[in-house]
Length: 284
Ligand code: F6R
Figure 1 (cartoon, rainbow, N blue to C red):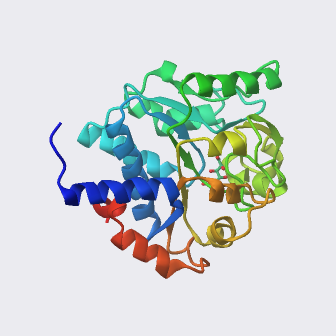
Figure 2: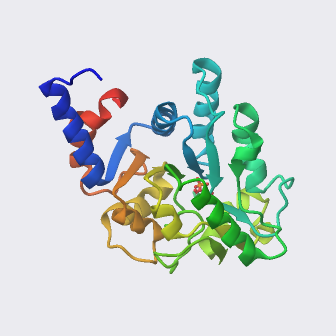
């Protein structure tokens, strides 16, 4: 292997240190398109560096433009998904994969059908399993067998959930069935044509499962997420807002647009880090 120069070693050390100690880093982008593109670029860079990447995926309105970007990168830049494995965070109880409101259907529609990921390498919890507890244990074991999640993509609910970890989810919780909070039912009603049609329960990876991922990347856009982002990033850690558990994670990147970042107190510090730290060199 070629010898590294002193300057190269310096930057390798800084990079290594920032991975170990950075905790949550916040990146503020001008608008939701730029924010989603940045998240897709982070994911693509990790996938190129490790083609067998184990990817944790999220659904919801915010993620749609991340998947559009990944599909474009696959078509235009040859981004290769053929060796990776994917694990989704959650699925509604009672919905079959064919149901247009299921997360199986969402993932097929927004990503899987448009890239070269092998069908057998994509995993979601089965919301129609006869024994749901058994299904949760099977899903946890599958993640473990794959060697754990390398990069977990996350959105955030208006009441602070990651996955469907609703208020008072234990910060060490594992994959299990959770009853959806009224705020979540309201938030997801447009996808079902009314609150009455939203399933009341879902299988979700636990907070403990999520924060075991080697890297977490959370995307939030729009002013309706401004309060919860400020709470999640700068508020006290509490099971009332499961996203605050990300503060315990050694390597979590929170990408927001100006609107979702509007209520953060330390905006100028976050902007300085993105503008100056070598880790973000290729992303500015
Ligand atoms: C769904 C999931 C949820 C969503 C969150 C934000 O798989 O994990 O936590 O990411 O509810 O949803 P949107 O983007 O629709 O606001």
